Every structure is written in structure tokens, then in C-alpha cells.
Length: 124
Length: 124
Image 1: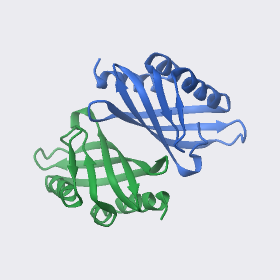
Image 2: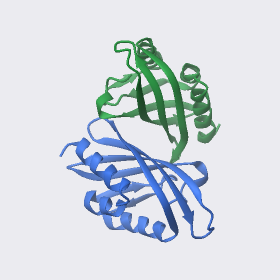
Image 3: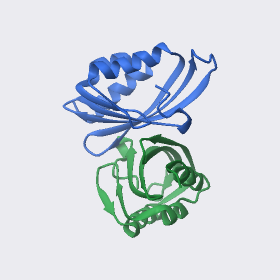
């Protein structure tokens, strides 16, 4: 597949609410995930677990993904907006986020999330 | 200044239509600019010239910048939307774009643009 095909598939799955299907089918075994605060998680299992833990603490009312947007031979970016209610506060918030993804051999090998300051390191 | 202060200043200037003021005041002398097709331009003068050449070929009707969004100690991202009419076609188009910026010593040392495929390497 081309980078474009992989990226389009990823965005389509996310826009259908199938984020975990995207992770399971498209993450490389050695994926590295970089959070807003710069902290890294390595390995497909731990990276998916991180999202599962976050999902358990939040109720997502809606998610929209713009993109993919491309740079060079192996990277794409997306712009996320979603409505979320953290279970800890019960207060609905609007979240914006940029994700930058690196693709090798049709799998996502690195993801890097950019957040609002207030949410850095805490949103996911 | 903090990364947050630099990034906020950059976004504010762009949202006021003062993109060239932002470039002149915030680019490092050694800045590297990476276009959607992966091509690189080095040095503050050549990078600003690149934007001047692009601007000369386009009429921008409006620009909005969302962000800044942060990752780690020295990077921020923004999401651009703008309405543009290339002088070559006279046909108005909507453009979306993600920019990733690296900051050192309060100056932007690297910028990386992510585009729609159709526009990669050709939009700017």
C-alpha cells in the first residue's frame, strides 16, 4: 500500500469511531507513542493499553478527524476535535489535538500527539 | 520566554494576517523549512523568500490558525485553514494544512508542513 492508502484507512476508521480497530490492525509491533509531555510508550500492547486506560476514564460524545495531511515519504498528520466528559469531573469539554504518524512497511511505527498546554500529559 | 509564549505569539500574529512579521521576528537564522514533498529550504532569507514567491502567485482571502498544540520541551503544532485563489487559475480553493514547529532559544529553528496529497509540494 502507499502512505496515502494507509493514512486514508486510518482516518476513515477513526471517523467511524473504530479507533481501536485502527490500532489493532495498523500499529507496528514496535510502535512508539509520544504524549504531549514528551513521555514515550513502546510496543503495540502497552500503547493500546494506554488508550484503553484513558477510554475507561472518559466518555467520548463525538470525534471528528480532518486529514490526512502529508509530509515527505513516510509521515502524515491529522487534526482531531472531540467532545469528551472525564468521569472524574462529569464536565463536558471540547478537545483539539494534532497527531503526527510515521509509517513503515504499511504499519504505523510512531505517533506523536500535540495538545493544548492545559491538557499536556493528562488528556490521554 | 517559554515555548508556550513563543508559540502563542506566532499564532496570534498569523491570526492577525501578520505572517511575514512572524517570520521576520521569530525565525532563527539557521531555520530549515520542510515542504509537503519533503524538500528542504535552509536559512531565514531563503525560507522567507519562498513564502514571498508563493504569496506573489496567490490571493489569500482568509486564514485561520488553530492552536498552538504542544509536544515535549520544544515543539508545537498548528492547524491552518485558508481560502486562496491561485492567480494561475483564478479559481478559489479551501486549503487545510498542519504545521509542526521546533523552537530553540525562543526562535523557530525548523518548520514542517503537512498538506493534502493533491497539493503536496505545489501549494507554497
